[in-house]
Image (tube, rainbow, N blue to C red; front, top):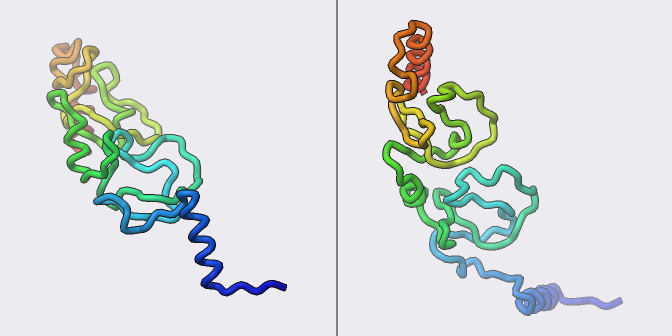
Length: 165
């Protein structure tokens, strides 16, 4: 039976890994990244800060953004605040890490939402998105000047719920 020295085996495995490009030295990760033996196959990034809706449970070895950082579209790990600042260009919008797929609108001020999380730009507190895609106050929504008591009560309830969040 052949006996191998443990150090020889480690050296041999290291040479094979290097020759196949499988080995990344921890210190070779770019700034704001860390080396992980088992990182997510679907890491968070600026365009999907809460991760993709569907992802495998597989883990991947390599460099990943450190906690508090997300990968931007250039592939660089940046602070979450830098990432979010790039996202919302329209007036009266704010970035929300989870509620972009379930935003109150003039047509549906109280949407029924799923638990699927999607980051993106939504209207700032107290505003609803109109049919043109703009964020407006409730009185600027179509029919917002109605004097029907039921209509007014409905929208007052919506405003109170929005302000309580």
